[in-house]
Every structure is written in structure tokens, then in C-alpha cells.
Amino acid sequence: MILHKGETLFRQGESGPLYHLKSGMLKINRVHVDGTITLVNIIVPDETIPHHSLITPNPYYGTAVALVTCEIDVLDAPSWYRELEENHAKCRGIALQLQSKLRMMQQRIDQLSEVSPAERLRKLQLWFQSFVPVDSLSDVLTQDEIGQLIGLRRETVNRLLRAQVNRARE
Image (cartoon, rainbow, N blue to C red):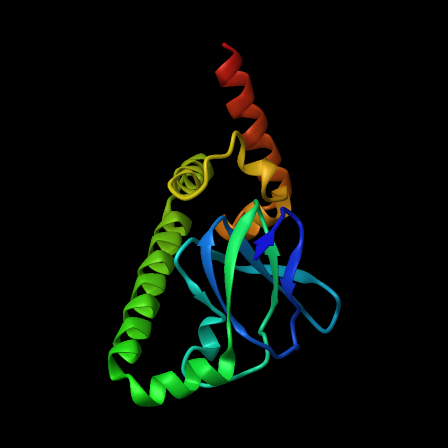
């Protein structure tokens, strides 16, 4: 299946199949009771989601939205879980995928631990470029979402992005 930028793959609270992202990037947003939306995860190629349902079924934790055009395989949940019971090598594969996701989250924590806000932004931009070539991070994320990923206010992100543009012009 092809999902274009801005299209929704699944919605928070729904239940359904699992998905394997072959190419592209997705964001996972969580809507809180008060209506605020938080960007909680970025899904990169070769991930199977939702992560919290890889071993046992569970409703979707957030809403998945395409950041760029994505190619996605839809995985039948009953077949997936049945195969897990019969194929222990598949369980190892899931463990390795979750380990990889943990390492990616550790990289994001490293980005947050940078003292300089400009360096946090630079590291996030490099990380994104390693998966999807985009001219600007603002082409795929709002300034609020960028701020959520690196622990900065939207105003600070705006100032840093403008400074980058000004340096590039010089």
C-alpha cells in the first residue's frame, strides 16, 4: 500500500492489523484527554508497528501519519500471532527490532542531552537525513513537533531555523 504525505495509517484507540514500513517515514501522535497532541515516535523504514502489539494485540497507542510518501505492507494480525507461536526465530527477529528501536531512542536522548539548542537541532537534522532526504526538517515536521523531539519551545526552534537560513545565505 502507498500512503502519501499527511495521510493517516491508523488512529489512536482503534484496533487492526500490524504494518511493516518498507520506505518513507511516519510520525505517531498521541491525543491527550485535554486535546493536546504530542509527537511520541518517528517510524523509520524496516520497522513493524505498532511496537506494543508485536507480541500480543493491543489497540493503537497513537495515530500514525505519513511524513513523506510511504510504502507499507499490511500484516494480518491473527496470522502474525499464530506464526509467533509456531516460529520462535520470528520472536528473535522481533526482539532484535525492539533492540534497534531502543538504540534509536538512546540516540534521541543523546540529542536531548546536548547543551546547545543549535546542536540538538543539528543532530536531529542529521538523523532525519540518514533516513529521508528532505530540504528542510520543516518540510516534514511542524516547529512544535521539532521542539517536542529535542526539548525546545517552538519559538526557539523558529529562531534556530531562521539563523540556519541566514548562515546559508552568507
